[in-house]
Image (tube, rainbow, N blue to C red; front, side, top):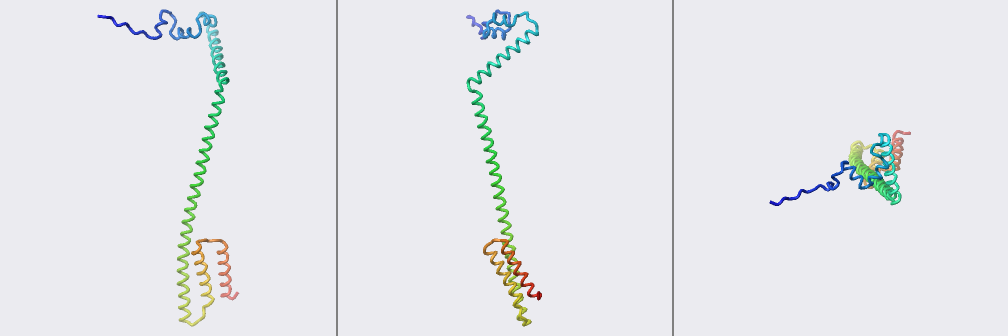
Length: 191
């Protein structure tokens, strides 16, 4: 029977040294004699810590220098500015949509109020028409002239019909209506 050779781990080529695997891999980046010059094997703990701080500082400074020279920060700044601008635009759009929804809701509510006012005016018009009929019936029964009261009711009826036709409730027409009504009432009371 033929023997199948064992598969070797990729790091097995470094086997034979008594150093740990991570250190052996590190020696491939920084040669052993350079590493022993920087940090001798019998160095004190304070020297090892100081050397680690210095090495980390050098690596960090090298990374920063690389990022500055390659324009990494310019690209990162541009992308961050684009992201913030997009977020601001989205927030503004959401605010605009919210205002638009509120405006539409207010229009719907106002339309509902106008419909209510129109229905209310229609009931008022019907009541005025009935009052005019009753005044005419009283006039026929009693024979008394009620031209002033009929004129007042006719004026109010005309104003309500005008509002129903235009479906507007302007302050001017209310003011005119109130003034005319007060003038007629003053005539009947003898003022």
